[in-house]
Image 1 (cartoon, rainbow, N blue to C red):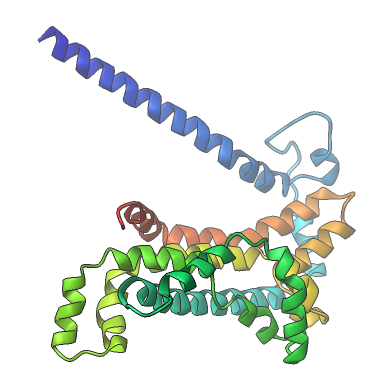
Image 2 (cartoon, rainbow, N blue to C red; image 1 turned 90 degrees about the vertical axis):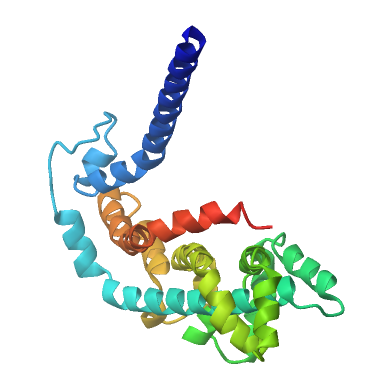
Length: 281
C-alpha cells in the first residue's frame, strides 16, 4: 500500500512538472506576439525606449490610423487571399493524388520517382528562383496571379505527408472497391478523400500559412502595386518606417489576423491530423 501511494504521488508530481514546463514554454513562445500587439498601441518613442514596459503607459490608436490611411490593405488582402487559397487548393489536390499514386498503385520506377520527390525537399527554395523566373517570363505570367500561384502548385512535403496517410488505409478497402467495379478516380474521391480528411486540414493550414507569409517570390514577380501581396506591402512599409516601429507593429498585427483565424478555426482538426501522422506507416 505504501509503495502504491508513493507511486501515485510520484505520478502526480511528474505530471505537475510536465504541465508546468509546457506552460512556461508556451508563455515564452507567445510572449513576442503579445508584446507586438501591445506595442502597436504605444507611441513609437515608447517602443524604442530603454525601459522595458510590456503594458503601454500611453494608449494610442494613431499607429492603426496611419496604417489604414497609407497602406492599400484591402487590395493586399484580396491578392493574398486569392494567391494563398489557390495555392492551398492546388497543393491539396496534387499532393493527395500523388500520395495515392505512390502509396497504393504499383508501376515501374515508382520508388525512383518518389526519391526525386523527396530530394526536392532538400533543395533550398532560393536556388529555384532563377529557373522559375525564366519559366514565368517564357509563359508571360509576370505580374499576374498565374505567376504567383502555379510555380507552387505542387509540394514535395505535401506529397510525402499524403503518402504517409494514404499508406495507412487498408488495402482491403481498395481491393473491395475494385471488385465492385470502381475506377481509380472513384476510389480516390469516394474512399481516399473521406479517410484522409484530417490530413487535408494539416497540409492545408501549413500551406496556407506558408503561402500567406511568402515574401521573396512576390518580390521577384510583382511589378505593379495593384498585384502586391500583404507581405510585400508590409516589407516596403516597415523599411520606410524603420525609425518609427509603432506603425510597423500595427501593420504586422493586422496582417497576422487571418492566420490566427484560420488556425483557431481549424485547430481541432489540425491537432487530430498531427496526432494521426505518427500512427501512419
